[in-house]
Amino acid sequence: MTQTATTGNLASAQRIIIDQTRYTEEHNAPAMALTEMFTLQRGAKQVTVPKVGQMTVNDLVDGEDLIDEEDIGMTTVDLTSAEVGAKVVITDKLVRQSQPSVFSLVGRQLGDAMARKKDTDVHALYGALNGGTTLGGAGIAFSSLAWTGCIATAKAGGAAGTPFGTKLYGLVHPNSMTDFIRSAALTPSVTYPVPRGWSEDLLGEFYVGLKPLNGVSLFEDGNLAVDSAGDATGVIADQGALATLMSVKMKTERQRDASLRGTEIVLTSDYGVFELDDTKGAGIVYDASAPSTTGG
Image (cartoon, rainbow, N blue to C red; front, side):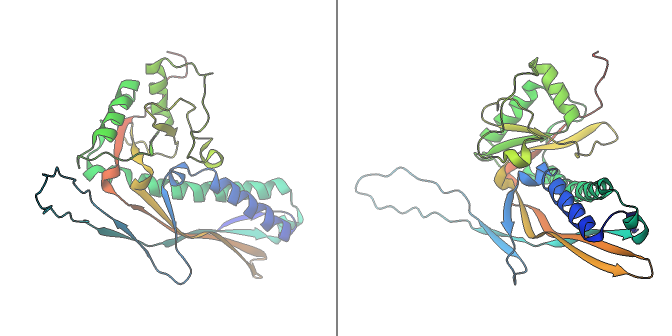
């Protein structure tokens, strides 16, 4: 359904709304910023990403011919994009009675909506990683010992028996992070910057500020869905486990609607998110029930 807002000079209104939308959207979708990024070039309909298997090097015997042949084991994943969008109508009346802060408010609403859409699209992929075998379990608190076990599984190999990768990260619900902090008896004032290799600009708000355990950075994301049992499915993965194909990051158009006595502002994006390599990650299920706010 069309949402109607109204406020200030139309050209300024659009600029403020779009600028705020762009800023908010870019800085509120941490899950997408943790994936491998691809760009769909103009004139193309998809990106085909090749994957190769593991090879084995064997011992040799002096004077005997090398007869073992290794298979590249190449497979491909096709990435395509699809459009999403929203529309806001700025009426003439509120343009005449404008306050610039209303434009920023509308821009922030649009940015939050786009960020939430992109974020949750990535979240929906977590449970299928690792052949659908998740770590943790329903009702289990996310503790330092549980996280250590997840890291060990990622480095030793999941259901496929191969290590997830070298640029590992974890993402959990903020309520789960509370259990982690309590279990590890961490000092809240002791914080660390976003580790090298991750974007401070895009991920700084979501990095938990802890020194990476065994080199694995941990992030939190309040957009993770909490099910009826109070659990949320996060992830431990290599950056190459999931992929984002971006065709149009954000596009804005303006159209006058005389009968409505207003102007439509339409924002769209064209992208897709995919499981790039099932063996490089796993969903992690932990309790995400609201913690006590009384210190108990």
